[in-house]
Length: 312
Image (cartoon, rainbow, N blue to C red):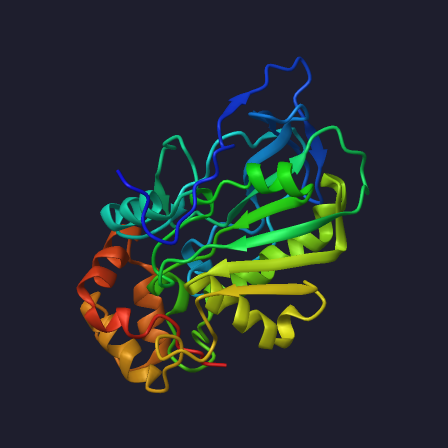
């Protein structure tokens, strides 16, 4: 398949897992994590890779349509060597988007779940703690209702530029931005997930050889819009220091909506939660399964026009 216009595939992303008797283990604020080494063609020093590191509790049950909560600590060495599930989305479209925009030469397994608040870390191997390398945090695109962190491979960037690369995920679709416009569901959950991930980076990047005082956020399409939003939000103050927004801004027509209560009622009715009282709608939606909410999202053409409601 020909490479789509405007997409560059690095000739260096030929990799192999290093068979080391001592794979990388790093302390985080939540507990120790186990990663693995990968080598890139032309580079003697491997890259330490940690996949599926939780930065928040799963947004399930009462945490659906709610601000993200810190991940639960663990007292063992957590295996973080497998790609995390992408956030709940249309599986066919999600896979197509990943194949279109990935910079990987190899295919990776793609799964989907509401339990998706994870990040991936790529850092030059054999670094000492507090090496103070610049950090770069990638926010994926996909219209705020598709995409995932693992579509982007941070190996080449980490190896070529000697930086710590973090790719993050955030809740998508109605599980992300559903808002009743009041205290029962304020909305903007996806952006709050991004803020939570940036807090995690500040608390932990030094242990991966990164500098918490030199963090750049960057993203494309909806990820670019997210970068623009984070630049404007006081919630993200001091969590990053540079920003690169690629093909996306905060004030696009797809990002801002005012008639959020009417939209919330229509979405709830489509899910079988017909009501006008916010608390009743949210209680009913909490009882729905992940598949039922995804089906509702797919039914709602209006959802594509209201990907964020900005109730704040």
